[in-house]
Amino acid sequence: MALRLLGRGRTADVYALDDAWVLRRYRDGLDARREAEVMTYVRAHGCPVPRVRPDSGLAPGELVLERLTGPTQSVALLRGELSAMDAGRELALLLRQLHAVPVRPGADGPVRHLDLHPDNVIRTARGPMVIDWCNADEGDPALDWAMSALILAEVAVEPGRAEAGAAREVLCALLAEPLAERLGERLGERLGAPAGALDEAWARRAANPTLDAAEKGRVGDAVALVRAVLQGGR
Ligand SMILES: Nc1ncnc2c1ncn2[C@@H]1O[C@H](COP(=O)(O)OP(=O)(O)O)[C@@H](O)[C@H]1O
Ligand SMILES: [Mg+2]
Image (cartoon, helix red, strand yellow):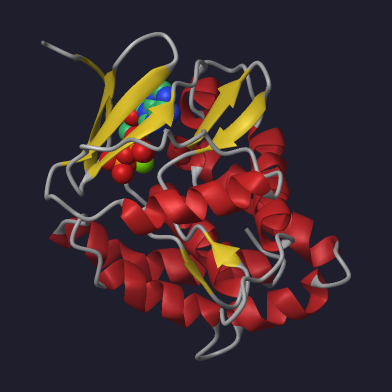
């Protein structure tokens, strides 16, 4: 049976199975079982995450997920249906909601998505839903904020990139949110502190095999932009 390709990211292909379900398949055969477990856990605690169908007979790199309908944040931004300010706020709300999920016994902190950016949020009629949980782990939530900020900043510093201006505005809106929070005052410090979450995010992006050499070359500039925004500049 030929499946209809719905979407392609950097690591996975997503096919429509029917109106209700999609098949997400890693191209490199990465094991998706832990990802399924994390998604099921945070969903049970109210996070907007597609349902994972408990399937037998799937290959280790395959997941059957609830089919979502709607544009990604990126597409909504591009079409002018969503402002950069609202996109940044939405990302901040999603991060905060995720980090409020009870820490699992034995874990070092709350679940972190670590790749929460406008391509990984689908805006459905029921609200924004978070996809693409392959990098998720558990630990200090400051790293999750730092990864989102850095990924946005990477787009913002890319010469000639059409979305650069919007990405910068989304970044500013995202970082304006946690800083206004009680917990956020410390978060801003930890994000920008030497050897803090931002440096760890830098190391992770520099080691990410899905980034090409030119993209990796810009991560340092992106870190500088995040620091500038944290210090109140743009
Ligand atoms: N549950 C879903 N329902 C509908 N489309 C989806 C779903 N999950 C992913 N997609 C589509 O597939 C694309 C890639 O999925 P994603 O999980 O982000 O993979 P990658 O790790 O390769 O980025 C998304 O941008 C979206 O268009
Ligand atoms: Mg993705």
